[in-house]
Length: 355
Image (tube, rainbow, N blue to C red; front, side, top):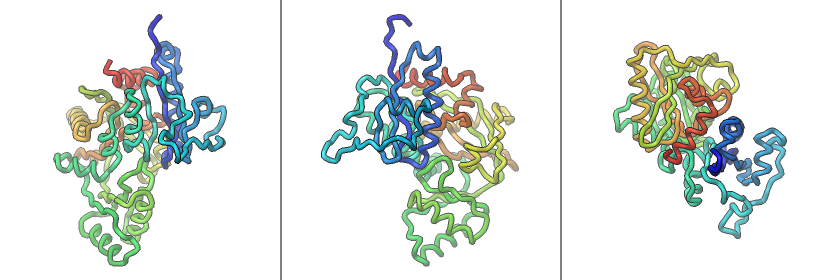
C-alpha cells in the first residue's frame, strides 16, 4: 500500500428526518469500521453531520459527534444556509472527498434527495442512484411495480391525498378496507422507514386513528393485510452483478416488528434462517429481481414474509440504505456470509468504484 493515495470517504449522517438518531448510530458503526487497522491503510474519513434544522456542520464538529466528544443535541445551530447564496454548502470543505458514503435514513436521504445533490460533485457514491432510491423509499410506487411484475405480495390498498376531515371520505375508506381486506391490517405512510407512523389495526374502531397517524407523515397511505408470517431478510451488494447474503430471520417478542423492537429489544436473530434450501434459493432470486426492477444497486436489504401456514414467499420491501447499527440486520447478514463490518464497508467502496 506504500505510495498509494488513500481514498477519502465523505460520510454523511443525521439529516432532517424522523430517522435522525438511527442515522447517527449507523454512522458511528461505519466510522469505526473505516478507522480499523486494516482500513486505515486504504481510507481516511471526513464526516458531514446534518442537524435536525437541516444545517451542515463542519467536519471537526461532525467527527466529535461520531466519537462521542459532543452529543448531537448539544451542537450549536450553524447558520450555513444563506437564502441570498445559491451554494448552501459554502463553508463545507468537501473538495478532497473521493467517495461519498451517505447514511441518511428516511426523508432527504434514502429517498434520493442526497444522491441528486451529490451528483453535482462528480464523485462516486456508495449505494444506488436517484431513481432506485426514490422508488425504494416510496412503498406505493414500489408495490405497484412489483404487482406489474407479478411478484408475490400481501393484499393491499392505496389511498392518496384523501381528506380525512370529511365524514363521507372517512366512511368510504373504512368501508373499502372492511370489504377488501381481512383483519389484522397494517396502515403505513407511503414514505417512511423504521416502522415509524405504522399501526397494526385489529378492528373497525382502530382504522381512522391509524389512517390519521400515517397521514401525519405522508398524505399517501398504504394499507396491507396482516398474515401469520415469519420475518425474513436478505442482503444485496453489487452493480452489474448482484450478490446475495445468507438469509436471516428475525423473531421478536412484541406483537409486531415495530420501531422499538427493531432497535431496542433483544430479538432473536437466526442466520442462516432455518428454511428449506429450495425456498432460500427462490428468496434470493426474488431479491435480485426486485432490486433490478427498481434500479437498485450498490447495497440494499430486501425484506420478505414467509407465511407460516403455507410457506408462501411474500415480498415486503427493499431498503436502499439499511441500518448499520449494532442491532441492524444488514451487517449481521454479511458477517454470516463471510464479510465482517470492516471488510463490508471496504467492499462497498470498491463496488462504488467498480473495483
